[in-house]
Image (cartoon, rainbow, N blue to C red; front, side):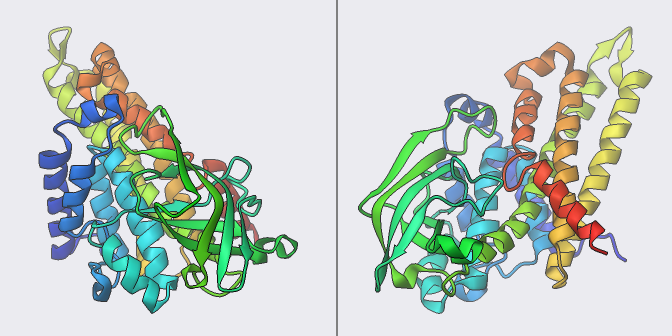
Length: 380
């Protein structure tokens, strides 16, 4: 067991940390206030190789391991979770899904643009009545021979308006239940494809979240991913890896909030001394640091399981469950350490607290993670 980062991992950490400090920090509060998508920053992340880190180099990817990816996600999320969720969706859900299960033609046409950041992807599973219950798809894709006709609505889609390509999960044969679900690649601008209003969110306000409406959208047969009926398995396998990315995001939010609280405790004075010298604050920081380190080990363990070819359903669920819990707890405590200043935007921690909450909800709520965990431990 070796807990030291390799030289390559350290270089990735430093590159992501520098980018967050030099490119994301400036303007992050304004982007949050105005709900502005970080388009320029995402383009630069693509140029630096952060948008397709784990994908095959043959298709423009970095060919990196999952450890590298979660290290980058943590560093970016310390500063701007709105930008990091774009990186997460593009890497974990879109690029990984296409790289692992897509055809050579699909990879050449779509993946090569997604890995470089030239194009952005979105993953479309959730619906008004099919969030945690992914089997209850109301969106339909009717087989018409050489194409499908897609109808339905998808909700809460990250990169909803900024994406160029959308991986859409739809029901083809309702009688087959989850075995009748398929996954399709849909391009922005196709006739009948409409993007709904932008959601006004509590946190990660810089990322654009929209509903998507499909009205008789014609999808070529070659845009189906995998064999007929593979869609549900595709979604579950892809989301299992996506949870690791969101766990890393939660870890980064927690670590960012902790670092701000620690530095603030060294300069803010109360009762004649820096507040770090008061046991109430010192112990709070000790708890924050311990929780973050425990979360980091869970995240790295799940990433290592994935890299080693081991089943990572359980470790990924545990990492997301615990890291998201830690993100909320640490961000809340960071606001408390800042006192009144923690409640105003210029000190950043109130935004991190708002951003933290979504990590307990998207890509599988905490309750869903507990279902995954309990089923795994109870079957033995």
